[in-house]
Image 1 (cartoon, rainbow, N blue to C red):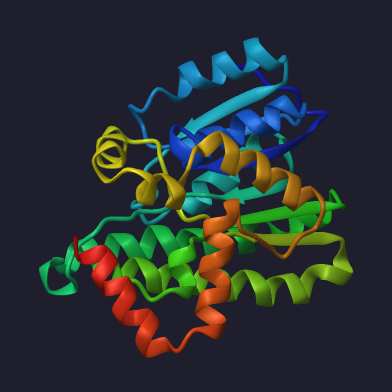
Image 2: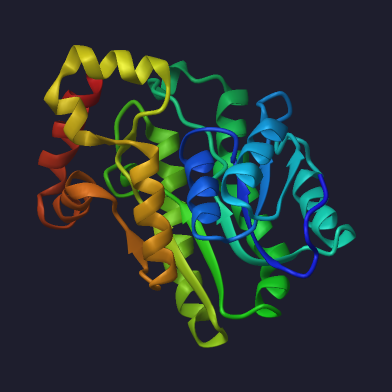
Length: 263
């Protein structure tokens, strides 16, 4: 696939499914050329062709495993070698899961910290000069409502998303005078996997109210990013989570989260 090197692109990690795929499609719908990055074997080439055919925007892709130590540098080098100008960096790559902390093996913890924290931080640093060269530029870091809720059964995940939230807010302040807009996306649950769909049918309106479709999340996210919003909370439930975390006594909130996620 040959993309146009005279354009400015949105680079999206974790672009093969879920929010990442929806973000890529939303960018393309707005006629923003896209560079897709995801694991090998996840249908990325097919998705790139579909996006290019449907929206008529320049598209390219790179299959890579971010658990490999030099993977972040490979993404940056790929863009340099192909002379791709990146104006929008969307850090969506991440790993979740629902486990008691004592049941996680050390390798799972290492993978989650690597994907959720290190990759986002290192990619942002590597692409910073590139973004400065194509101002106004944008960084969207995909966090989670779990980042300000301290969710039991998601202890490590919540901690990594708290990092993303804090990192994004601090970076926004550092870069706001340099023409780079930084936003953090903090959705609640997102329905995109089959097991989530089944769970939704079983748990009814409670699950539905707490979960959004990735297409909706992506639409709100890109709109908020382009408008320069510091934090984007798609839907009323993620907004409510944020305000609850600020105003409800933490002991009560922690116990409520424990009861909800224990089921």
